[in-house]
Image 1 (cartoon, rainbow, N blue to C red):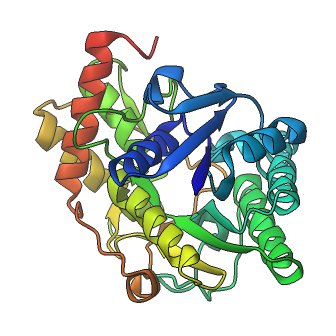
Image 2 (cartoon, rainbow, N blue to C red):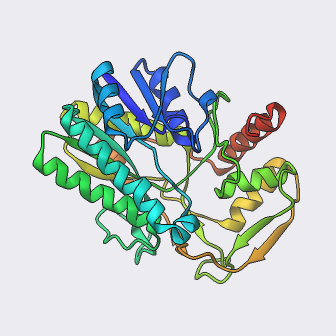
Length: 330
């Protein structure tokens, strides 16, 4: 049984590759390297450079490697960019995912794990938000992910095909062994941007919106360590292999931190009082969203091991310092 990881040269995908290697899985990666890095894929793993929308390529890889499961990370993830380029996001996240799903069905792949997002909930009426909350996406990014969830559900009803959609909350941190981390240039993830600012890679950091209905006026998010996130995928893979039914799960800690609280953590861990500037709200940002995580804990047996904001920041900062020393992100 071989696992196909799409987007395996990216931030989360590369952590997934190392996780699968660590537990002895056979795998292959497809990545177009638009935002991923060739060096992020371990040398013992075959990297096929190509697009998941290229069905001839994907079917060839699936046949050659006898793929039994797909873990799908490939896609675009920047919310403001999706607002300015909605058609690009629907093409990359929805149309190409449809092609990948079709290829999987045609090649008899039974198990499919999808990288979805908590952004499908929009600005939830209740928080922590549970999986049965009515989706209310506020950006084309969120809509593009929700559309893929709908396609997966319809496909599972029509074919011998099962899926798990994991709705991520805010992913951060880096591999505890220092093997990979968030390396994208110009990234918009709060903790990465704050770490770059602490190390002098940026002159300042902007806080987008200080008038939200939260304790300090800034957005509140549930930050999850990337290592715990990829372990959730391994749990989902085992669940599907053991006959688990198609389902959707939140992946978060059920604990929220505001933007200012995160910046305080980065300042505390780094020892640097960097420049923070207050800016207007960005389009597509909900005020606060925190995961209800009882379902994934009960059904998949998933339990977090890195649920500590300062630890997340410390490892993200160590990776950022590593990038600076090697200049591998340039």
